[in-house]
Figure: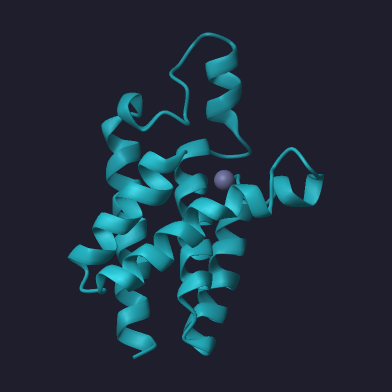
Length: 136
Ligand SMILES: [Zn+2]
């Protein structure tokens, strides 16, 4: 997932869920920055941050820190891991399928299956709401 999800979708959903423009930008840029900060190609440990099922654990850990520290950057990280977990599939199976020529590139939002788009949005909204309910 690139800027279409990690930046634009996150920003737009944050606004819809009641965050201010400044807050929405902070969350979205943290979400987008996660790939540069923890590039999947750099190490095996980093790969666990971008693929299910381990990305769910990272998302939960970042979410806990976001809530404890009232930390919007951590919230952005939590969103990134959840969004990747949905889009990339279990242990990156969607990438393997795509490389085999049997499916669409999981990093392209526009051609993602509707079910993946729906779930990505649902998991993003759920975390944004949880933050607003718990950290304010
Ligand atoms: Zn990622």
